[in-house]
Image (tube, rainbow, N blue to C red):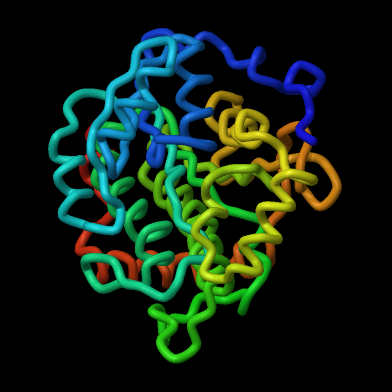
Length: 305
């Protein structure tokens, strides 16, 4: 059963006033994304729900108290990512890379990338770099404890996992990439003298729609059972994201629940695997991601802000 937010040592009531700030939350139709929007908008921020299905996005936005708007973004289509970024004008205080797919059957994005790696990592990689000239405060990217599972390495020789595809291993692969992306993004921001910070977060086990499209019926049943018996609700699951988004934390920090196996609990700083802490792998992944997406780190724009 989920904990009562008001009994935790850091909770939604600890979010400082966000008036005058603007945030983008990807994948904000439901679950963790919508809970994040509700909390930030409730604290006074103007929040953009960046969603693939704008009809569902508008329905979700209608339930939120505060200043919100909906814009279309399909992270599995780089042309959509570029269109979203090109339409952005003015400062953006906070980008939350929340959207993701999990344990899906083998598939490809519009640009031909393995779906989970392409959506969870490459789509957010491109979006972040395209928006960086506008970002004034921080980027928070959602990873998962699953980054410790699977092969525990980036398959540079086979990023599509062709011939060795496993839904869970592909998800782990993408979540490891999210942490390596955060590591290298922070290194580049620091080198450029930018005040912008890159952080990561994971929700523990949170009951959301993410588990509803599992490629395995049996695993899907297990996950749904876990949602009922073990998981936090989406509001509690969003707390590590919010903690990373508003607390004064060092760049490169990784937030997650403080409970047993980081499955649930109050948000705190948590550790990551050795593979997720390797700067050489992070640099290599960044170079490959630039080559695949055609999007590069906008260092000149950052140094002239």
